[in-house]
Image 1: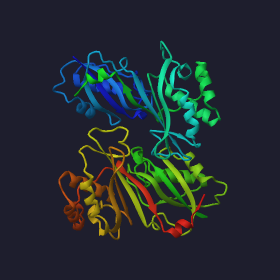
Image 2: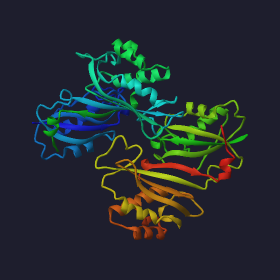
Image 3: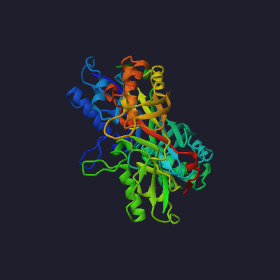
Image 4: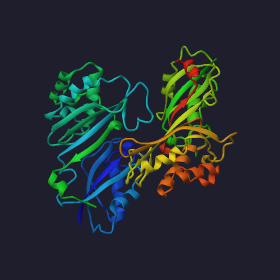
Length: 260
Length: 260
């Protein structure tokens, strides 16, 4: 038996998110079910995969991290190639590693970076709409950036948590939160932190966009954060702009991984 | 009556191309039918739209040019807004102009630029696959560029024409043909010419990729061009990498257009 770490890239548009669900004719497939289906075929037995965290329906991943336990020797399997041959075009495995037995995609993670991409233009762009959120009114990064800076540090982010998931603590540390301009008319919000609550990034982005639109400043953002009350935060930004960019692990765990 | 010039952007993935077809349950919709449907609703009578040229199924447009005749005054219609509210997310109208009566999207065009985008990476990228063609083996731009340079000038491009469309002449002038690196791992071939035969860009790109793969050089490209024989050219590159980038008209016609 070997614990395997995979890096996945996916277009979340046509999935009901990462987490496996009871699939019916009405539900969209999930990324977990697609991956586990392929792994179970390869190893001829049921394989369970664990991700660094769930991604919502419509959210994309540039480097989602997943682990599973391979029940037998992998020497005769070109795992990355085999998986990519079986997975739909909307999911790729970019890397596979033999990881230490105590590596856990969720519990070992020390942090993550998300990117939220907006295209800011008067007219809808059919070539952007799948991977970025359309905002029609001009956005001023000089107004958005001070809102982002409020988030930096250790805070109780309860105001930005969508209910529905039990967590022991809603305290998280945000290390970086920064708006920047990509090539016109794209804008990106990038946030790095120790962990993220349910829909936290989308709730943060939605609130920043709401405050920007309605003349709210950093003091309003601070008040919403300090309220520790979900009803004080504003809109939830739509999923298509959100990309899970990277998941971080302790350096000793990274070093102990051997690429397959 | 006023002749109207529209600029359209579209994601061609889910369309059977520009040209209207008899649609059945089995066929994909067309961009022409979607646009004409909206125009006919707005003007409450059948409207026909003429494009600068057909785009194939799966081919995208950054700035397709279309004209139609508006049967009545447009003063009370915010045409761009009305069309974008009715069109599917995969099509946008970015500009609308009142054009001179003798403006014709197809016959007035003096040239076009196409971009062909490739992502050159060992592993399929779900976030690129819709708008770029995946080439696994490393491409060397220093080998591709001399193949492109063979195309520049006035030539009979019969070798690069897919049969099926009657044209008077297969002679066209290519002004620019250039490979360049976008952000890693994207590569772009950009070609500007007086006009393009059926699938000419895809046949040119497919042939260049074939020659690159098989050690063919500019002399082979020249031989294929001079053969004036479709059977001498090689592969047709797939549609998803192709983007109609711009259509050109005489400056006096551009100046005579008034933006709506």
